[in-house]
Length: 112
Image 1 (cartoon, rainbow, N blue to C red):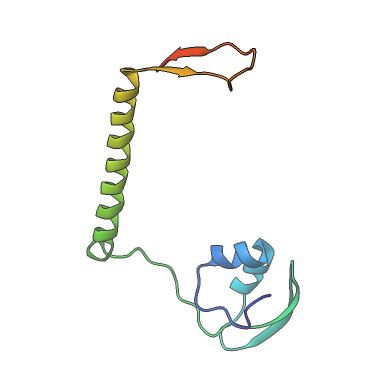
Image 2 (cartoon, rainbow, N blue to C red; image 1 turned 180 degrees about the vertical axis):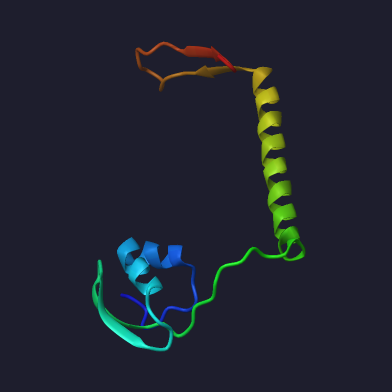
């Protein structure tokens, strides 16, 4: 069920997979030395931390294309939602029950 090895991942990923206590214990280990048993929600583990890399903020040039893509996608989503709202305001929506039922037709004006 669990992988035999976990590649270099952020602490939050370890915490999500094995629990916050396990991630905290992993953080305290010395790279290059076996440790354990360490307990997680899956049981006991022998652990070898091969390397630890401190987190860092990436340079703007490296993330700019992804940020621009996300910004444009969000803008398109908002514009589309606004367009649908404007269109919906022009119509009256009528919801009728199945044929032969006693339920009356419900009429609603968009935005109400």
